[in-house]
Amino acid sequence: MKKLLEVTLERNGEIRFNTDVDVMKDPSIVHETTMLAMLSMTTRLWGGNETSVLAILRALSLADLAVSVNRKEMVTMMDAVSKQYANAFRETQKEFVKRGEMAVFAPGVKPKTKTKN
Image (tube, rainbow, N blue to C red; front, side, top):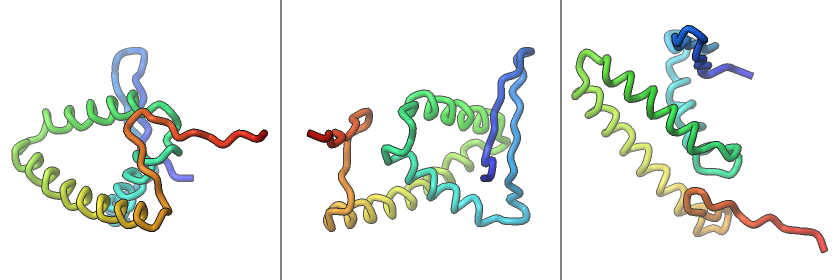
């Protein structure tokens, strides 16, 4: 198991970050993590705490942008890259649905589980 990101709020109000990942040694981990995160964020394997997790991820992203030296450039880059990921993901999703290998549920809707009679 690899720790992608650990974020802790200390008693003194400081936030600490830790990771087992070294992007300098393995730059492909960023792409791989993005793909795996997209899959996790769109499946029921997520754990039921989507609202809180997404809120914290967005708060961290906002903090990163707020302290960025060139915020507009970063927003433009993130918009372009996320659009590419979104387009690829939606096309893949459509193909899986067409083949009957995936069912799509609206956010917050849990699939019905089969019960034994």
